Length: 203
Image 1: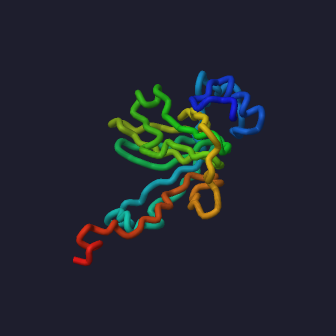
Image 2: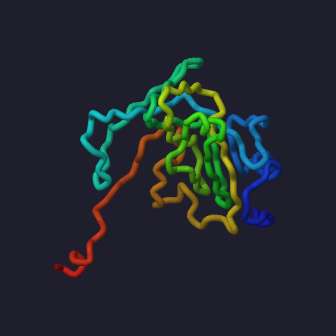
Image 3: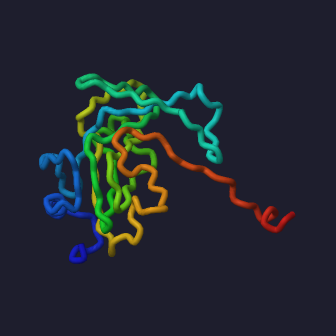
């Protein structure tokens, strides 16, 4: 995209990139194209948390087996209760070229109903491919029924000034979520705490 300035892509540019096979969104529905984004729909895979399994989430040693996948049958709702947090996924599988980044954002109409679709992870690296995991939260005091297939978020695209030298999925990059198809739990690896000045000086 050397002839495209570093900016948010418009509907015409997104369509041209999809038609050229550079951006992949499957299944592709032209009706989901918005002025500067593409609507994406909710998939059928969710991951629910089992808080009783751990006393705390320790980021130095993240727990495994903290969530369980729930697959919802066609037409059935998935209920997210007040204050609850769970993981979902998009129906659409996407592939992003090395010179574009994407952001997933909630739809304002759903936000006004108290549904959030991502807590922090709204950034999609250049080179990523797979479905997008959603971080779903209910901020209201009443349950919200979610249905697979409903538009739930929107994906916008931005052109980089040049292609990434090490796009997502490059060897040795730690691309934990490349190719994911279901809602995917955290693969955070944690690690030892940073050394304090006293420890670094040997005191």
